[in-house]
Length: 116
Length: 323
View (cartoon, each protein chain N blue to C red):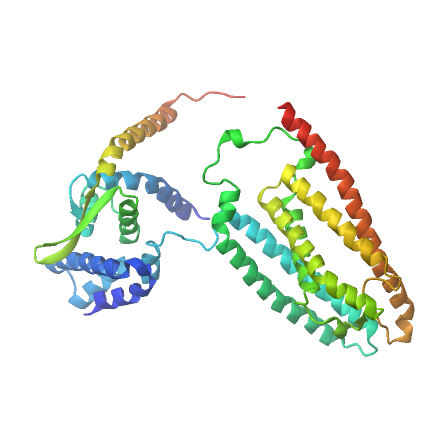
């Protein structure tokens, strides 16, 4: 496996877990599919369609999101937002994310020790 | 300029059937939203090229739609490893069985065509592999939820761990898969799923043997299938436990019963090869004698396993009681 492929694979793995949290955070306010993608892009998280929309449906299936079809600007769109369960879980997920990020930082900044 | 409609039509059959209309409507809304934005860009090339680039960004319709399916694989991990082991073994066992068939045919027939024999081995191995492949895949696919439940894959707790056990209690998964396949293939032979014995010039020594075998066929076949089930259990849980030891004890007791019954037949309980070539007469006689001795060997081996497993069961019982 060449380095580019390996880097791509590792980046994908790294993003996979973080993306669910980013999407849930974005859904604290109402979005339809395309507006969500734009919103994430504007905040520096460009995600391709084939990854984002199935994830949104999975979160909805897990009852973390709720949705409804509505007409807006003369077009029917499906609007999603966090469900009650999603609102309840989000603070815990955020705390988990911060703890994980802090741990990685501590490991990265720890002085090198000789374990031999 | 109907790229969007074309894309949705291409993706539609790949969406999960229960959400197909809903997903297509949503995809259309997303693409239209993106299209509004692309159209508004003054630096964009022709409308047709723009629309084409838009659908291109969604990727292959099948790949896009596959993301909405919950089950991404026919057989999921960790059952897939066992499935692969079984399939790999079945391939080699079938090759061995049909090579044996070809050898028997060579011994019993005066005219032997080597090219025909090679073709016989290849075609029969491939044909039977396809059948077994289909059956095994179906078993793993339809029984997956039950197998996962049996292994406690989704609700495992540390206190389910058994106490430390002796070295002998660990089984090799490869060996279990091989034994599983051997038993399934022999069950296939007993139940007549393989080419008829007449083509190999194998005959029962007397009408009485034939009648006895007709009665015993479902019993022997069921025993082989039960042994296969036990080996499948060990492929999934590669440790001897009290349940599998008891099952093995009972099955071996049944094997002793069947072999004892067949050994009482004076003419021999198994079909004999009929040689038509004078030059292979000696080999045929030796082969037939060996065939009759197989019953004795099987019976003795089962007796040994009963003795061994009784001791092991006792040892496990003491370990469980002790800790």
